Image (cartoon, rainbow, N blue to C red; front, side, top):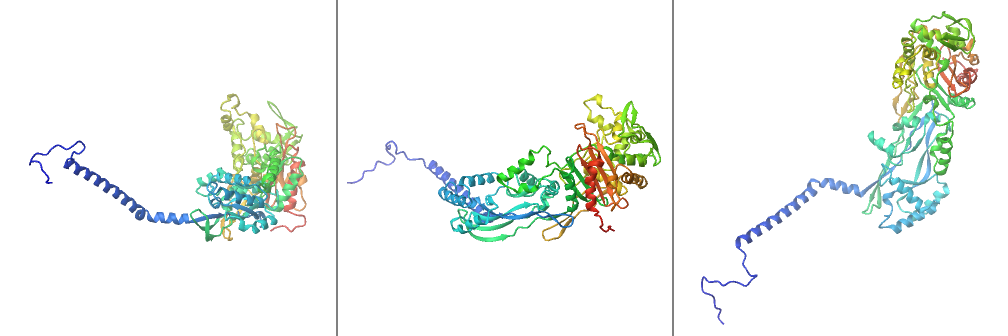
Length: 633
């Protein structure tokens, strides 16, 4: 059948839905989608170029890093030595077992494997799986914790437990490591405990402080918390080592690819003489009450002994669990505060041990001469009676006043230094500060109290909100002249001041550390003496020294008149408003002709200095200068 076409020029309408699109619209739509596809493919090509060319090296390096896992190894802390090389603090390796969190089976996808592994480990070390999980969780929550850092689960393992772990090694995962727990030990127990300090596992504050100083601490690092351990923590910290493992996609170790050995911390040598230190601590322990002693070398400021009683054994901070808790609670609850370093942080009125400073100021000011004398009826009247501890009669000159500790002489001397309401006490305070009183000593310990040296300006500022108490009265000057009133010092400050008198006028900054050497023995730091003049002429200081020597030969310090060495010193009894009995003080130096040691002792609330503080110093002097020993050149 032939097809019939409609006549030319007449096209019938098509049924609905069969309309022919306009050619221009169709072409535009095709161009739009073509452009869209080109943009998408272009973006993909650009991204591929960025990943493979621009950032290719970075991603390759990251892939390699992901393929390798670094397990950090703790380094032992440096050794602390005494004056002659005696070991005062060191590190002991104990058997321990640790877990690497990154190598453990996942707690989600491998829950059964993890439970089985921890159950086996718990059985071998007499623990529980939950206890192990708690330790891991606690360690992971610490600042500075890293996924591949080993977490110590148990320490101080006996050989039987170590043998069990070794025998069952095939049943344990690579995440379980037999390691060494580097425990800090102090071979001499509580000797110099306050000065050495102690260490503990770093807490979040320690980690943050290290980050602020641009250094890194791991969550299982031990850090110094007090004493030398804290002050020189950076030097004592060793350099950690590491093991480099190749791991699979599940972070399971495949092979050991390298190891960097750990490096021990530096060796720190102290000026402390263990013989003198032990003698000082034993003598303090036998004293009537709590107390402290400081002994320094007048020639350079090196600290020879520094002790406070009661004390504590820093070894307790290396204990764990209930052992540590029981030991720590015992000293924390002790009402005598055994962790307080009284030698450098406790402030006391110096009493009559301040009189050599007053005598130096009086001589330098020209207020008195060696021949100036007064009469002592046992009191001095200035509005009211200011008492003296005894009646010394007439003809009390400077030498006798020091030897017999006559308060009346020093009352009058204080008034002669200038206007007793302004210039006099101001000058006396200025001289005392030159001797190191009223300011921190600068010793290399984190705890170093500055004491207080009052003057009229201080009193006005201190009582700014109490106008009625701002004025400085002559009576304040009298109290200051005998080391009472608002004058407060530490035992170390008095030892430094006594050393300055002994050596002819140089106040040395006291130092505990003499040198630091790295793990290979190379010297990295040598402490140099730092001193300054007290501004008192050698002649005037010689006069004061004669008075202090006379104190020992003919005065209140006679019990320290030793046959083997000449001693010069000064007793003191400082009133305490909280107790009936005063603090007992004694300062001295020896040999008197060529001083090699200066000592300050305080025994709290124990009476006269000659009866309680002096015997402590005498024990140290006997240790420093044994009877029959050949005199040092």
